[in-house]
Length: 241
Image 1 (tube, rainbow, N blue to C red):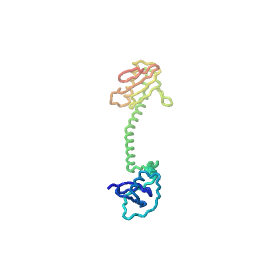
Image 2: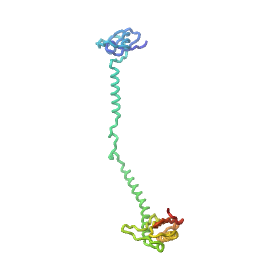
Image 3: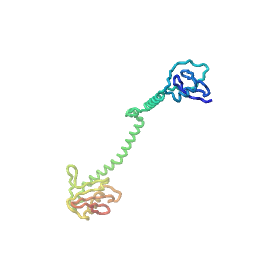
């Protein structure tokens, strides 16, 4: 036994029947007609008129699963598929504001906030505890050095050590331990005189502060004359090009 497919001559539905049956019956309209005619209509139904008449169900007839077939079945199937895909996309579409996060949506636990603030306070305290003494030391040392800075240049060159209204003068002391100084002279000097200025400044600085390391370690003086720039360090005097 094998199943055979055909088309109902009355309603156009797909008819499935036993290939040994002479007649077949449509499960939708119950039309009973020759099996060969159903096969022929499935192959070519052009020009055939489907009357869609109503028939009574045949008692004791053989019925198999069947699917209605009409001329626009493919078109309707395509339309249904488009609608189904469209609905599926709409259901997955994310609204622009659906995942927007506002400040009110993010709330940190109180314990976390308190711990964070406490950590910041501790860090700031440590920084101040380290930086403030260093700043105070440098400020006091620089002020003390300025009091006797004239002696560094005495008998060597002319340097205007008088500060203007903005606190600017012909020299600038800087560095964590006031180890650097830049000087502007109004006259020319020799290398030997530059070296003597360096020695004088080292002696003055060391007399104002307690430095356990080498008294000339890291000290640098830059002397700007009308035509030259001398850089003096522990290693010696260098003429800056």
